[in-house]
Image (cartoon, rainbow, N blue to C red; front, side, top):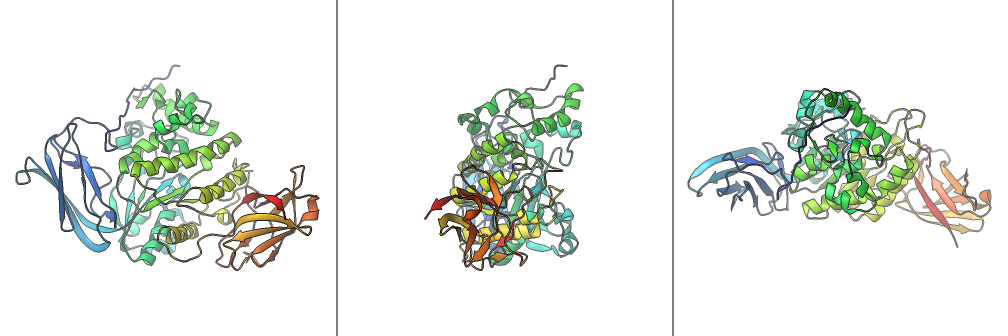
Length: 522
């Protein structure tokens, strides 16, 4: 049967909003609301829609600025950078033919100024605090008016492999896909919020002693390409095929992503429901560029401190997709930074550990090593290792408190300039000396094992490229391996299993990442 879907092409306006007919009603972009936090020390950008030609005045914290609504009904006002403030204040937006003749106004109350972070990715970032290992203790104690949460629930959330209904189909377009309001952090508001983002915000608020706001827009299962604008994908010669034809039949994507699309969309399509879409096929949160249009494109240029990211499972199921991710992830970072017009800090979680008997994780060691290299090569990026908190048979480990804390350590060091240890041991050189391979590490003060047992997880390969487990010993801030184990060592790797066996940590208890590096002559 030939599938049909409605052709609904969503165009982007100058302010990253869909083009719409000019309306007399004054509205603000959906990211604004009561209880929100504005980013300190950056110019707040306030935008929305109103009648073309009207004057818009924005007042906040003793300052006022104004603009005129453009011909298609968009307006934008930029204020001077405010300092941090825990004082609840009101932001007022007024529309009128003159500043004296008002035709409408909006007041946003209980607005604070502090640090704002955007949390995105897939299910391990979406994973709610209610399911986290420490939920019973954390949720009752979660009341903190200095932390504000914008939890953007999405159409089809938790549907997994079942068919979308008319409600989900009706919201399967960028303006309606997400829904949510800013709320003060309290037991009721935090239960369904990202556990990692909550723990991160708790640490940053406590350490920086300023209000913290977190916007969570993570979507379970979503592939990286769904979060990148279509023009950016099309401009890359290696990725251009992602923007050719119906994504549900495009073999450039892996079977699993297309399978989930069919599971959600085939029934409503066969029933004749008008599924929004365009020349790339029906809309879905796995469709290339769709989450970009629904999320970041509608949040930018809301001022942020940075981005938190936990994603990759859906781009690691096939070897070719791992290689593809080598291009996709740096492109995503560049694309988001371009949208905000600044080099936002980008801190991400490495994939955890899981066995291959219940999950297609055979290529996770390569993927984790790729992520390790991203942390070293992408400016103002950082990574939290999670492999020591994986579960053998569950892709959603329940221990998120420690992962949130590790992300906060990265942010405290890299975004806030604290002189603290934020990384596990990182290899920077492997050299053959006197029949031993010596591996030099940075972030290696107090190098030890996590379980007080001998070091395990290291392997060596010689000229034939075959890796063999070897016994390793710690010598100060170095690890020594017997080079004679493979004759002439050429490569060394560590933690190179889908469910990592590595136990190397530094004095701060932070684990070494999965890695593979070349052995050099002395």
